[in-house]
Each structure stands twice: as C-alpha cells, then as structure tokens.
Image (cartoon, rainbow, N blue to C red; front, side, top):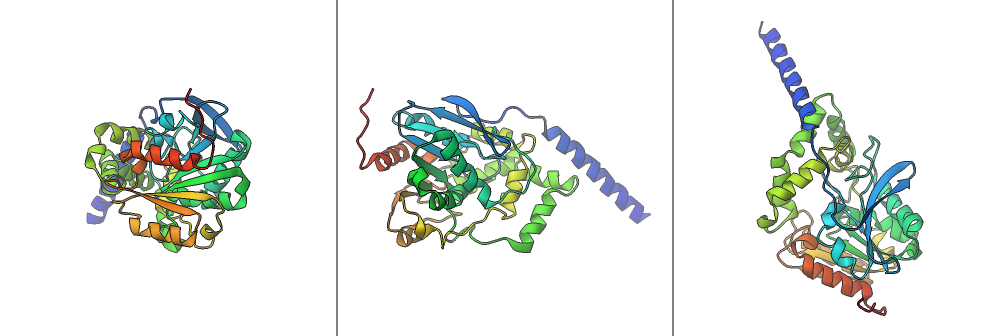
Length: 322
C-alpha cells in the first residue's frame, strides 16, 4: 500500500512538473538591442541574428556576448550605440542564444571560435576590432591565433581560461548534461535555473557588484530570453562544463595588442587572474574598473566605452567628428 501511494505521489509530481514546464514556455519576445539594423547571417546552415550600426566606412567592431542562461547581444545595450559613433559596430547573437536559431546539438568550444572567425571573414570583411566577454573572451582566442589577419586588436572582458573554467568537466559534466535531458525532470531543472528568483540570484551574486543594477526590468529581460523555444540547449552545455577551455598554450601566441578589462569586484573570475594574462603575453595591457564585477561594460559603461575607444584608436588617425 505504501509503495502504491509512493508511486502515485511520484506520478502526480511528474504530471505537475510537466504541466508547469508547458506553462513556462508561454513567454514574450527575447530582449534585443534597440538601435541599429537587425540582420541575419547563415552560418553552416544555421541562422545567426545580429545588429549593426555606425557609418559603413568606419572601423568595424564585433561584440561577442558572454556564455550563460539568457545570453544575447543585449548584454552590450550600453555600448552598442555609443561605440557606433566612431565605429561600424556588429553585435552578434551566438548560435543557441538571443534571436539566433537555438537547435539541439552538441555545443563545444570550437563553435564559438568558428562563428566569430567565419562572421568576421564572410560578413564583415577586413580587419576587425574584437570585443568579447567572460567565457566567450577565452573561446575567441583560437580564432585570433588561427586567423591573425582577420583581427586588429582585442578587448577581453573578465576572460576565463587561466584559472577558471579551464579544465574538462569529465564524467561529472556528462552526468549533469544528461540530467538536463531527462524526461520532465530535465526541463524542471532548467526552469529552476532560469526562474526569476534564479536569475536574480545569478545577476546579484555573480554578475553585478552594485545591486541597484539588478532591476525587475533586467530580470524580466533575461527571463524572457531564457524561456524561448530551444533556449535550454546552449546553457546546458555551459553548466555541464562542455564549453570549458584552457588558454595556457594559446594565449601567449596571440599576436594582437589586447586590452584586458576587469571588474575589481568580480567573484567568479577574481581580478587576481588578470595579472596572469598580462604576464603571459607582453602585448596585453590591463584596465581595472572599480565598483564593478563581471560586467564592467554595464556597471561602468561610460568609462568602459571611453577606455575601449581610446585603446582601439590609439596609433591610428582619429576620425573627424561629423
């Protein structure tokens, strides 16, 4: 009798979770940048969304958002328009993120490097200034090493790869990844991760130093983006460590001048890791942003934009203001 009651309770729980999972699929549009022109790029049969702004003849800048649940080019909402005053700015949604296609597939480190490399070559052309955030900042490094002529300078924001997220997750990662695709329970696990409470915890505990930036509006923006059809697949690879990538071999080989931008209060990738990036590559310089964590380009947007513009245009003939 007790066993029957237990099975009945478990079945009821699974039915309830299934109904909850279905209800959570009914959400609005994902967050998107407000400025510029929305376009699409076909990458190996998949549709990648991006926005572009700025004069056609201006130096091109490619913005690559970080890797997390709800990730998209919306991360650069305080930089996109401002940088487009002096640059031709492209903000890309990586495969599985934002407004791009979100297929169920095996996502690995090479995917990000290949998307950035192909996009720079085929869609932009010429030498590109590359700005990338957190884990993506590590994952674009192979592209810079393989195709040095595609890129002019790099800006890496709180990059991983030298002290954090730099090792394979192994069998534990395989187990976690499998849990995301377990019937009913997998969606429940993901929905707990990207609940409004979960998003607020992540943003407040890891992304931002100043809790005033964790507004209801920004929580809702990330919530909508992370609940689009297929939005689970890319974060599942991230959480299970499938996108971890070490830079100890590749980073010293990057030939470009690079600005390492770091939030002084970053916790998941502490600022102490920044010194290793500068020590292992003499072409790198460091800028620490006070009162900022993983997103100095958001928390200290005005200063960040000024520093990036100064760094990118240093040694070039500055464009006259129109």
